[in-house]
Every structure is written in structure tokens, then in C-alpha cells.
Image (cartoon, one colour):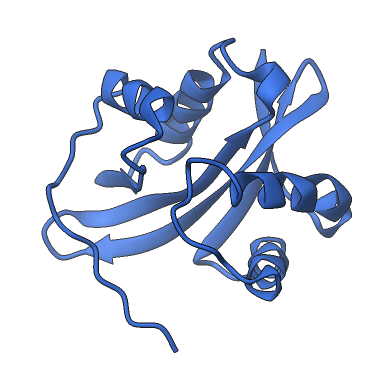
Length: 146
């Protein structure tokens, strides 16, 4: 059974190796500096109202993590962006991803839209998201860094 709890600063030694693993897999198509990833963790465990970090547990054992951000879209209203979802390789294929999304949808009932990004090569994740009702918007994403 999956349980989800808020991430704390004490989770850093568990979370950061998983973050490194996440950023070196097919889920990510560009490099991100370690300093940025460490700052994200610090923000996730702070009182920043826009970013939340969660530890996923199965039967009391850590099996992954997730980051979500809160935002507002003019065409939809309140939105949550699932920034990262990482389940340890040995825990995959047991329905934990699906269970996380069920928890997320229940935990945030006033959210009008849930949004995420998926790389074209991450077919397993894409299949899960489609089964959960996610559809492609067809937009190209553009960014400008600082």
C-alpha cells in the first residue's frame, strides 16, 4: 500500500541520489546543474507555497519521491504541475505510480487541471499518464533561462 508524506530536510540523503538518477534517465532530455537540483530540494522542504515535495512509501519503506508546483492557468484556473515523479526501479510495476496519482487527485480536489511533461522516449510513463486520462496539448514548450 502506498502512503505519501511531506518531504523534510532529513530526507536529503534519500532524495538526492534519486534526483540524480531521475536526471540521468529517459524522463529528462537536458542536463540540469547539481546546484539547481539541490536548490529545488531546499525549496521543497521550505515554507515556499509554490513547491511541495513528497516521499512515497510502500509498507513504511521509502520507494520514491515527487515534486509538485502550484500555478494558475488563465484557461483553466488552479493547476498543479507534477514536476518530478520518481519510483525506485525495484518498486516499479506494482501500481505505485497509479496510486500516487489517485492520492494526488484526492488530496487536491479544488485543482482544475493537473499538468506534466513527458519525453517521447519515456513510453512506459506516457502509457500510465494516458490511462489516467492525461492528453497531449500539442504545444511546443519554449523557455528562456537566466
